[in-house]
Image (cartoon, rainbow, N blue to C red; front, top):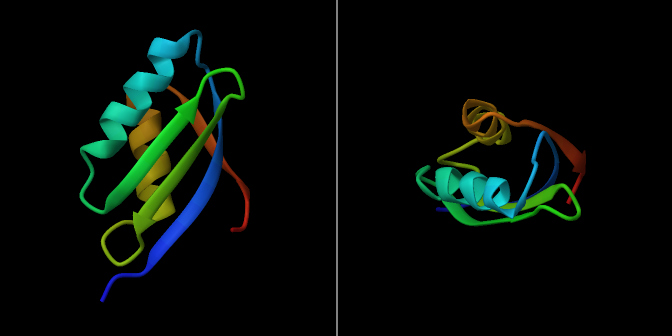
Length: 76
């Protein structure tokens, strides 16, 4: 059984909208990601994922591998 969770992340280090697309592209490769929508203008990413397959720490680690810093903005 899935446990779908939504989180908002603050992203640091993006320089353009292509950066946001890179983050989304890399996150969508992770098993358990339902949606990833990164907004360059707001410097935020909204992620929806299956917590039984993936943790928020895994997501933050993937964003770090892409070259950006991420932190949880709030509890959803």
